Length: 227
Image 1 (tube, rainbow, N blue to C red):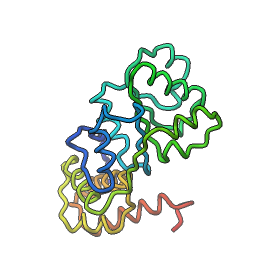
Image 2 (cartoon, rainbow, N blue to C red; image 1 turned 180 degrees about the horizontal axis):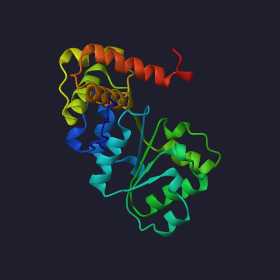
Image 3 (cartoon, helix red, strand yellow; image 1 turned 120 degrees about the vertical axis):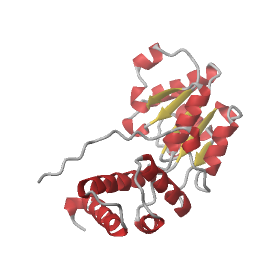
């Protein structure tokens, strides 16, 4: 008999209370709390994918009323609709025009607004050719978020299981923490896989099932499915 699993949309919670502070992200959170006391009216938060940059950016966006735009969204329509204020700029991978980005930075500054940039590298290290843009980026305060430590990973795992109303014991959490990739993206993938496995098999999540989920994720992420 075929097993059918209904898909539910589990949206990440970006409320302030949901952000768990640890050594890896404490400096970045302190900068968010320090606003509007930012040198140069801007800040860059950088760190590996899945480290919590977007969560912090969303906390600041809600506080400041900032507009969110990704790099690919900086074009004629953006400038035509610009009415001043604060801005969050994410997703440099989407590509950006150096002249357009320089124009954005100047617009925000001239209008008395604040700019928050998130990326996997500090803006001072971006490869840009425009001297003025390079100078602006080098002057932007930048704070790093490191990879989450074990205690933070365990807390986020437990929370995501609770969010899905999944009961797991401490032994499962400890097993996963010692063996998984150190990122929030990996946490989401593991929880989703275990949720699906539990629904299909109609069994509670145990250490053997956690092992199977990790093995499946590892095989799926290997080239050609090879270990």
